[in-house]
Image (tube, rainbow, N blue to C red; front, side, top):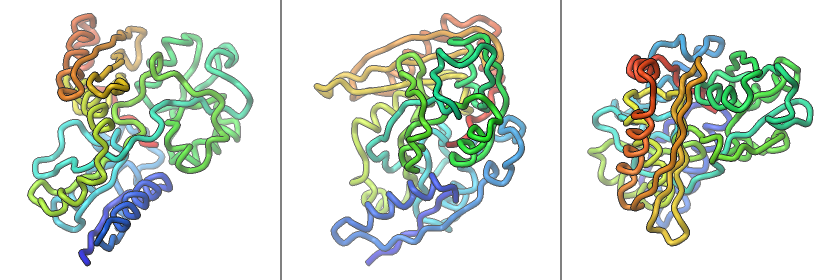
Length: 317
């Protein structure tokens, strides 16, 4: 029986995702034995620093990708939204298993919705995307940074460090913490991070045997939707996670992909929304088309902001 070394971060959510992949592989006919190897990334080590100050992109994946390139591990499991839209040469996104919930959710110590939060309420988030969308919906809100894994962030809100935070629904569901959810935010009006709710499994591009093994975990509709979302982000002109979001989905007939997205400023009030549709067989084009449309509406100041790449990477859930 073949043995595979699986690299992952050590957070509870990352371990849940890695364990899911390990079980799925081990359950295949003549499936491999899987050894999980926990690696610490830059983002994990700098737990008190805002992600915007860490300087590099891919702060939650870089060390894992380096271990994969050095053949210290055979596959890597990530939250897909953490992966840069341009991967290092020599690596391949071999599988995107069926996606979990895509939505963001509001978490608060007291019953509340985004509409009913008190005037001037404090929302803890380090995400430029979430700040831009929250500011658009509630210009009166105030923002403070929040780092840490999912359980620690929920606990800090329960302790009253802020009135609310916004987190990915998938992480809370996977960690059996859905009771913390006060409101599920509609992805049509609150587009998620590209790839949110999906798992990405990488291997080396030259490792055809492993790539073929992982192919069975790939879910076509998830890959198409995520490819459109990531194509949207890449066309905006930066490898960083911007103040931008996108939500792709396949029509019931399976032939049409629909994409909702936005781009805005991390610190100002400018924000542009749009929708696109096209063949599910060409998701990259659907994403790029919507990005170009929104860039055509952006002010010179926003275009310069995007070109500068001055948005921090969104903190991983």
